[in-house]
Length: 385
Image (cartoon, rainbow, N blue to C red; front, side):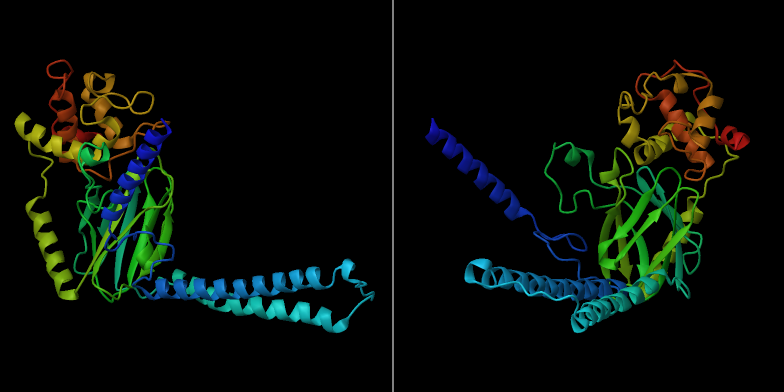
């Protein structure tokens, strides 16, 4: 019996070893067995790394010095060797030394650290400003100036649910991939203005040396200047709810020429996809559009089957809101539901998107033909804003 247990244990260890061996460093993200900070691709990240090692070395020297003297005294000046403790009231030299030396050490550590902290907060003279809004559980990006001024989009987790539910193998960028990354030019100072619509989130990209909280009702800012083209990954670093782990950040740093081309393409897409809230749409059009909006914004809470999570997120399949008058559901989508995790979507989705997703929930699953006013037109949403 012991032999079989031993073999089983060895088999488990070998399996774990094989699994670990297959894991590789994630480009722009965490590395296998990473113990140190990220090297970074911004001046701030480089300064953080230098200060980290400077302070670590100073602390190590102090540790070795203090404990070395202490253990030397304990071993070689113990009573059993006949040593007698010295008796004196005060010693001017010692008192000056243990005051001046620590003071100089603290100043030596504080000056470069303060300089870096001040630089972190200096968001002036930015080449580009992007407003970043935290939602449960996605990021919204809006370009305030520059070639992409007016471009805005939501950035959602792109990892398939099948991987999360262990129904298929994990991908290379598991939980660290998005459908739409933030795109910025290389060697440009990018100012990030942060806020949130629901709870506190935190925008963190280790390779940039950036971590700043996004707080409801407040605007806070930070900045970075990436000196290397590439994709860099981070995550929400604040415990923001059930799907906190599913809120990654991806920033694509590209050349200025590629950024200008991307900005022009995005503006063309926005112009061609502009929704007209005064135009009535057919049920089929609303259902097709609503299914996409639901998958991007609602499925994390209410589930793909509309069953929700009992005790946390209500079911939409047969739920009272989707079965009731359309006005109540429109107001819920626009303003959220106080006291619950239901967020307001008035600034996230336009009137066409809101009307289509409401129509979808009123026809999907087992709701077909059961609720009141099943087809909601964009004009109905506009009237209640």
